[in-house]
Length: 391
Image (cartoon, rainbow, N blue to C red; front, top):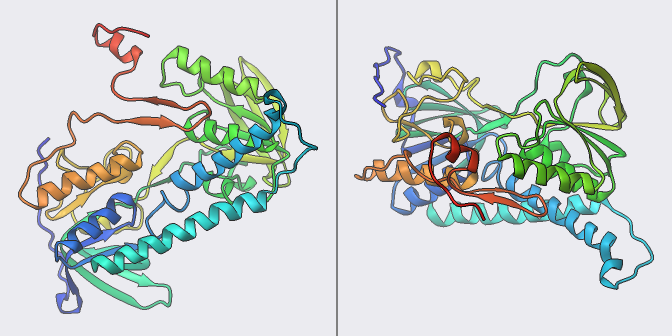
C-alpha cells in the first residue's frame, strides 16, 4: 500500500521543545520494548502514558485476567475435589483476597518495568499527551505543568477501549467492562454478560466458578462466532455444563437499574421479548480505538473508516516520521502482535525492511480447556478451496 504525505503549515516555537530521538505516545507492551531497545542502543527515548506503566497488558488486561482466571480454576478444583477422593468441609470465596492477589502481581510488574526503564535510560512520563504539530507532543502532567517533546520519530500506540453500544439505559446502568470486573471485591449474585466474544466467554466462566449465576447474551447464533461451528458448539457445551445460561441470537433492546445493585435487561430473541434481571451487568461487545483528543489532525495522520490509524505494511502513518503499532493501528488485538509490530518498526528505523503482510497470528482463548490456533480455520480453508486434513 502506498501512502501519500503532505507537509503541515502549522508554525511552532521549537525552542520550547525537548529533543528526543524517539517519542512514544502510549505505553503498551510494544511501546515499552521499543523504548528499552532503542534506549539501550544509546538513543534518547521518552514514553508518555496517562495512567498505566507498561500499558493495559500487565495492568488491566492479559496478565490480571489470567490471574483471576487461575484463581477461579483453583475454586473449581475445590468444588470437584470429591471426584478425586478429597473431601473438605466447604469453602468460601473472598473476592477481596482474589483481587489483592491480582494487585500484588500488578505492583510487582510495575516495579520491574520501572527498573528496566532506569537500567536502559528510557524516560517514562506519566501524563496526558497530544500532538501540537508534526512529531511534536505536549504532555500535561498530574500537577498541571506541561512539557513539549519533539522526536526525530514518533510512535503512536494508544490502544483500544471497551466499546459501549448506544442501547437505551446502558450507559446510565454504569455497567462493568473487563477493567471493573477485574476489580470486584464481591462475587456478583447474578452477572448478565452482553457479548459472546473472548472477553465475555473468559470472564463468564471465571465468575461462574467463583459462584455467580451467569447469563450470557449474544447477538450471534454461536458463541465466538468467528470460530468453526464445531469449536463454537464445544465452547457452548463446556459453559452450559458449568451452569451458565446462554442466550444466542438475542439483541438487547434496553437496560434499566444500576450495575452492582439491580439491573433489568430487555432482549428480543426469535421475535419474542424477554426480561432478564440480575445484580451486575458486564459489557463485552468489542473494542474502539483510542484516537480522540490526540491532536492527530495537526500532524497529517489519517484514520480509517473505523477510526483506527491508517498505516501501510511497514506501519508508517500518512505523516512523515510518525509510526503506529498495536491495536490503535488496527493490528490483531494480542500482546505478541504488538511486540511483532515493534519488530517491524525497529527494522525499518535501523536500515532493514520488514512488513506485517503474510505473518501468522497465534491465538489463544483462556477458557478451561483453552482454545488455541494458528493459521487458517477449517471454514477459511473451505472458502479458499484449500485441501486440509482434520484430526
